[in-house]
Length: 151
Image (cartoon, rainbow, N blue to C red; front, side, top):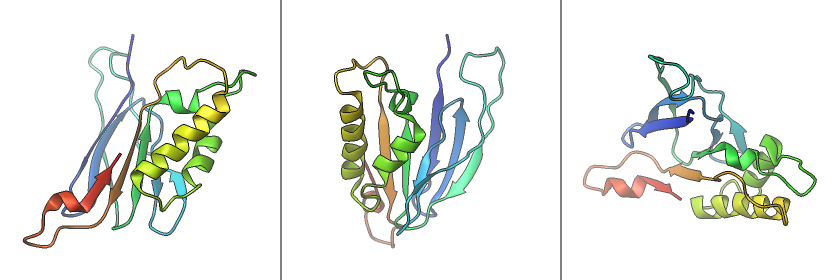
């Protein structure tokens, strides 16, 4: 048994994210005013796939207005009654229905597209998704919680 993990720490004062990817799917990033695209990050082995495995870290930067989408493989592996996979392309299409929407709207668009695609096919894996929009560094005296929003 093994598990995949994508772990990231966002420094809200800079927009830098330090992350480690243990066999997880690539995240998607939408630069402000653009569309979601896959971010081909540094991958490692899944957790518990090999004893004493070392996990590497990477780093990237979010500018104000950028949005990060992280998800489990149950999103892309969802099947329809014809046993077709939802796949990366359908996920990106759903993300780009309204890429400038709120994190909740983006999450709802992807969830809705998956549900419509699956039709009557039962869910066989988790479909966990997280959308984070970075608003930029906090000015002195402002509450830092107003500079990133997630759903």
